[in-house]
Image 1: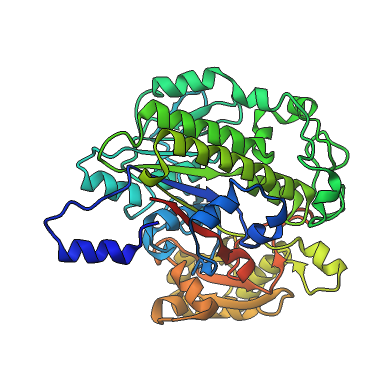
Image 2: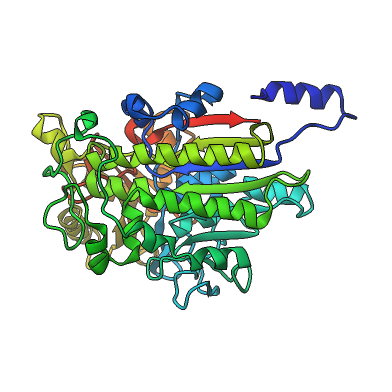
Length: 495
């Protein structure tokens, strides 16, 4: 593993010397991977996956995101831009567009068309991301000679890492089980991608039951199967092993694979096909392959952080990583490939599980508090629809009405923030003006500020108490500024 300071020394002292560079950079993002998944399942991992990355690489054990909210879109954008949402503009997965007066998706683009399927799953682009990415800088530096390919089950997990100049980004279409793309990248899928889709590996992976990889007694790091904190698949009475995927396929469709460990296997297969089809790592110009393993997020949301399903997903991902690393060794050589593995966010333990063990936790139900807020503002300022919308712990006020009434936006924001503090589970309520007019260096306000974009963000931001979430009482979610959502792995390996 070359050290960055050595490269800096060489580049500054021997300007005339050609600086060695990797032929291929492989960025791996494991969606919703808490840092402690590395240590919790350590004894059950094989020697050639996570353990190899750590033993032969460099393990950064204190890596934390420094912003709120910790979601998939902001996470992937931040990893590949090196910026925070305040700068790159991806402030959430969805946010309210004041001009259009509707919620918009972080990578949606109505001007694009789907490539690879006859539906709208490909109407996507990176247009809403305001900065360049690692891949963009590679392409700019090499005069477009470097290739950038991005792959994930989720569209946003493929589009954002690829950046604005990617050769192609691919994601899974739940309807067909094929990898699709957008006309942003080109009019048709590359031939190698078409050939890959014809194999219908999605259906092949769903043709067998999902059984535990190891004997049940090996899963003592997890709760008992079929717990009250898990959500069954549609068409399934109880959330327990074995999961009859062929039967569940009938009601869930091919998108079912996303919430199984086989979604990771399918992603790995596509990544290998991309390396071979695009000839990545074959010349002197450094290429980038961005790979997002999205299935752990789907499994975590559905079954929670302490389920046998999530443990089994990571044990199987460990094997997929081992297979992928072996392939990279054989085809390109470890000395020519730089791999980094990280996550876009973590997750909280299921609050209902914590509550049953007398740990403070809870669920914030926003409907009644927001209804009460609307009435409160009417009582102060008169009749009117003072709240435009609410989502992701953010309140958007009706600025047009506020300005029409010649009111102070700062005052109305503060009134709304102060009112929301009366509800259980709300620890802080912070106004947009507070984030605009101050500089915060640490703590939750600094995290909010780094996630705040003046043109796109809301008027009032709620910070919930630890282990409080807005979600169903089964499974889990993420988005906060607490350690369980911000602390993620970061491992460097190779070159």
